[in-house]
Image 1 (spheres, one colour):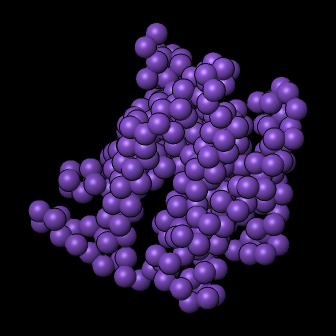
Image 2 (cartoon, one colour):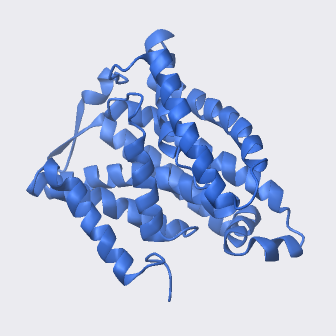
Amino acid sequence: MYLKLLISGLALGSFYAIIALGFSMIFGVTRVFNLAHGELLLAGGYVAYVACERFGLGFWPSVPISVLALILLGVILYRVFRAIKEPLELNTIVFTFGLVIALQNLFLIFFSADYRILTTPEWSTTIEIFNVSFTRGHLSMFLTAFISVSALYFVLRHTFWGKALRATIQDREAVGLLGIDVEKNSILAFLGGIALVGLAGPFFASFHYIHPTGGIEATLIAIIVTIVAGVGHVRAVIWAGWGMGLLENLVTTTLGAAFREGVTSLVLIAILLYKPCGLADNQ
């Protein structure tokens, strides 16, 4: 039981980490507080749904299609965000709130208010590890998320671009004075964050019913994990995502699903009281 709880919690937490890393990268580098983050996740899920259900493609071919579609949408959105005037954080909150409403209405027009799910029959088959049964879907999500997060962590920690990106998050003006192309970093960070959402979208549509207003929860998860970890702290975001996934699984198993949001909120409040700038902050 405990092994199954651990694996399923890490799978859910890895999914949360991917969503939060995208949000953290975008906000940390571009200062865009994207309230439509969950709606972009839904967009990736709907793209995968159309690719599989209407064009007959399998799940795995739908993943790169979702990523590419979200990157193209990200190119358009970045040009719009660049035109927004100061104060940037406040104005992007207002703009992305409007974007939430616009995307929800587009989803409603094209897909109606019906709840939809991406059916992947082979994922319901079980695999036994140490006499504990897991679905192939949960293991696939865990491995995909773990590999993606590990690759991103390596890039951000051990490549010049990754170090420049982290430096941009810490002090945008100082990085510009050192001759590093801040605009290029902003574009790459924004599109990279959007690509992570595109990667997570098909998995979201496979394990959750998607509907036009279903992105709000994902946005809240991304914000909570980012707050707990601190903006720009990649390792802390990963640990916070895993911790949240394990906590939710533990609460659901022991107390019931009705207590999940309440306990998570209490933990967030406690962390903010103890570490207002996130767990990774040294102050």
